[in-house]
Length: 164
Image 1: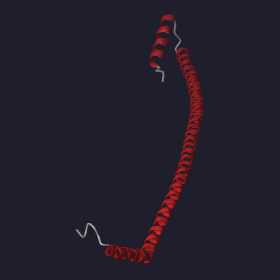
Image 2: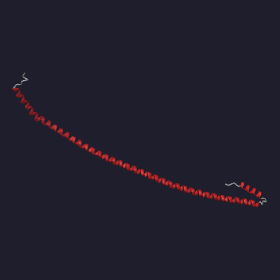
Image 3: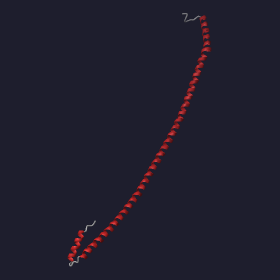
Image 4: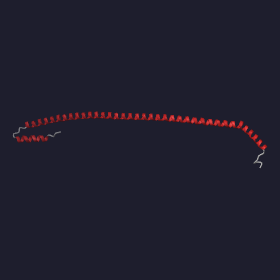
């Protein structure tokens, strides 16, 4: 029963001992503990502030990266557009050049054909004249009395000459 109802002396010494322990803890233990807790709290707060600042910087960097990507895309599109326009102009220029060259070649071919045609006609006229002269010579050399013999001789001469 002594434990349930403590004695007044025991209570007194327990309070004094508790006060001394409390004083010693307060002076030597709680101040360093509280100081350590305060420092820890400050360190955590500082770390959170730095994390928040880093988060803002990351957001800014991400925005800058997006701007740079958009600029790069715009430049790429401009380069592709310029390349496409250049390709189309080169193709158009090549078509025009090919048309001009084709027309020149056709004109030259027509001129050559016309020259060859005129030369062939001239040759044909010369041959016809030559054959006519030969036929006339043969007719003149042989004085024929009947027109039937003359016709036979002309037909025979015509059959003997082959046109080239």
